[in-house]
Image 1: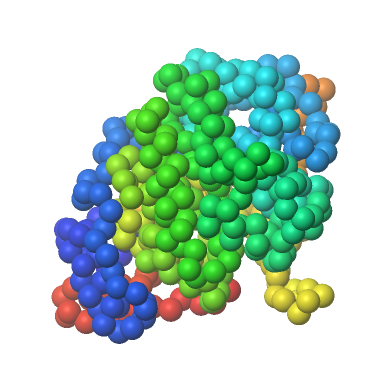
Image 2: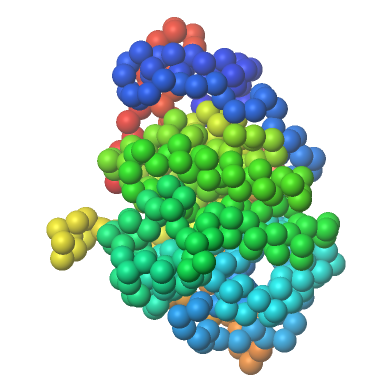
Length: 442
C-alpha cells in the first residue's frame, strides 16, 4: 500500500523515514548522504493540548509601514479590539501577525506601542498570536513601490545594491543580496553584522510581547529567497543562530519558513531533504511554516508542492504550520528576458466553500500545528479573496470570504468531513518496494 502522510498509520514515523531514506539514497534520486534527524523523536509543538490554532494573517499599521513610502490608509478606531472580538465571536483562535523590521526602524515608538496593543487585546479575547518577521520583495529599498522588510541600513553601504533595483526573486540585485545574507556578509555602515542586528530587533519584539499569555510564538523570517542549491545548509545555520538567540529569552514556539521561489524543477534543487536542511539544529518546539495557495486535489502542481512540504517536515521531525492559505489562479508568461514568470490572475482568483473545506480538511488530516488564512487587512487588495474585511466610515464589516473561512473551520473541526487524499513520494511497506510519484509540473 502507499504510505499516506495525511492519515494515521501504525508504522512509526522514524521507521518510515529510515526506509524511505535507504531507498532514495540507493536510487540516486538525492545526491547527498542522509544525516541523522535533528532532535528527539518527540516535538513539544506536536504534543500541545487542545485544537490547532485556526485563524488569519493580520496586518497592522505602524508595524507594516515602509521606509520608502507613506502608508495610504488609516486604522479605524478600536481596530484591534473589534478585529479580535469578531474573530473570537466566530470561533477563530489564532492570528499570525506580520511585523516588518524596516517598520520598526522607521518609527520605533509607534511600532512598539502597536505591538503592545495587539498583545493586550489578544489576551483579552483569547487570541493566540504568532509574530511573523515578514518580508516581501526583500525591502522597500530594493522595491520602493511594493517591497517591505529589511531596513535601508543593510543596503546603503554597498553600491551593488542600488535603490529601486528590484527585490523579487528574478532580479540580479536580490540574488546577490540574499547570497551575501546567507554567507553572513551583510553589514551596516558601522560594520555591524546583519544577523546580530536582526537579533536586536527580535529582542525588542520579545520584550514587548513575550510575557503575554496570547503570545504563542515567533517566525524567524517569512519565505526567504534561495538562489543556489548550496544555500540550504547555510539557511539552516542562520535559523539555528536565530533560534538559539530566541531560546535565551523564550520557550514559546519558533517557526522557520519555506523558501521562495517554489519551483519543483528549479536548479536550486527544491527537495524534501534540502528543505529539511533549513531546520534549526534544536527542533524542540519548532514548526515548519508553509504556504498553500491552491487546492491540491484540483491542481497537480499544488499536490506535488504540498507533498514535498509534508515530507520535508517528516525529515526534520517537526509539525507543519500552514501560515498562509487561500486559492489563487496563476498565469505564466515569458518576460522581456525570456524567463518564464508567474503572476496571480486577479480576475479568476477566488475560493468557494467546497474548496475551503477541502483545504481545511487536508490540514486536519496532516495534523498541522495551526493555519492562517491570507488575509485580514484594512486596505483592500485587488485579489478579491484576499479581503476578509471591508472598512466603511471607520466600521469593520466582514466579507463573504470571511464567512467561507469561518464555516470551513467550524465544519471540519466540528465534525469529520470528506477525507482528503494526497499522493506523495512514498514506499510500499507491505511489498518492500520503492515508489516515487512525480506529480505534475509547474
